[in-house]
Length: 421
Image 1: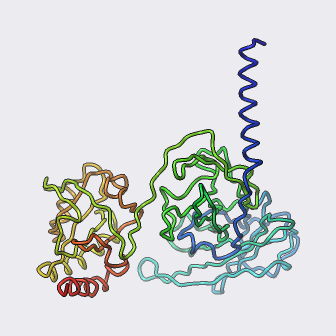
Image 2: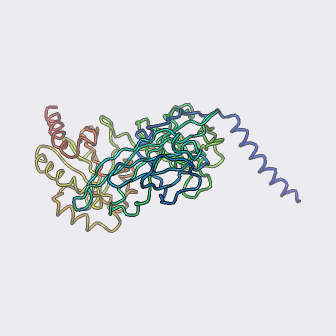
Image 3: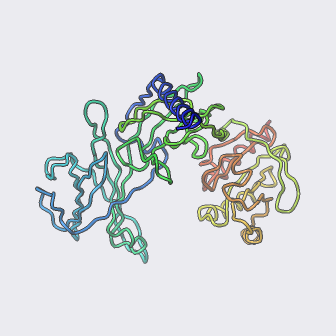
């Protein structure tokens, strides 16, 4: 072995030992386990699927009386748990899970399984079932039962024929608490998106580990998808320092250590809650003119409206917005549209706005979610209307108050305030 090769190997070993030493010295992060009802705190979930079959599994030893059973399994925490869905024609369905893994469906916690009707094609009445099951998650000295949300569409729904033999489920559990980084404390959550029952996830998976650390870096009481959610298997930058997760356990305790790698920091989105100041910007309108927002709207109440022609809810809301504009424009109400349409869709945007009577100015650059203003405002879903005071740049109302039947009353209230001032 050459001296150079020997030195290189020593260098690698030193780096590894240094990393282990840093991890050993770092305090353990132990967020509190939310065993059920975590999904509302997260604002969404990533559904998983398990296929159902009429073939009875050999490991089923005992079951209640079943009429029309379908069998499947859910992998969780390194084990596979049998599920049985009984759907007799003309009667309510029932869901069972072998939560203790002994092949007996009569000695497990009861499963919540509620039905809800929904309209199908041609006036058909269909039934959607939803509920929760409990499975053991490794936590401390003994496993803790955690909830998985479950649901199933009507097997006779022609619009969801591909899901006829499918049960969908998602993690309704998470870890929640606070993490201090460089002297600042942030609200944090640890999420098992893949519902694997193991917070270590899959570190080598190209699509991501399936486990995320959420950090409310701007303290706006929500987690931005772009800048405040981090794959636990990848380094991430907070406050100019690159960090990484070390010593993650299946139960979700870990250490946060400074990484040897360097990645760029992604700035968190602005706080667009009522009373906050919106980010100012200068850009070109579709007609070639330059707009300075909100500077060009002094004395006005202006709706900054993020939308797209391909967005069904946006187009459904358009007549309501047009009506409000026509009624209140001469009283000081303005609209500035920001289109998230695709590249080379300028003609379509112009045609749609003309056909719908959307006569106000529009911003469009063809970059969809990567559009400059969209990224600047941290927009993650549309329609996203933001009502702004043109003089102060302050947000005047929650988004839910500037849509549907609430739009006109909200506008009248804010216009009256401005006139009085």
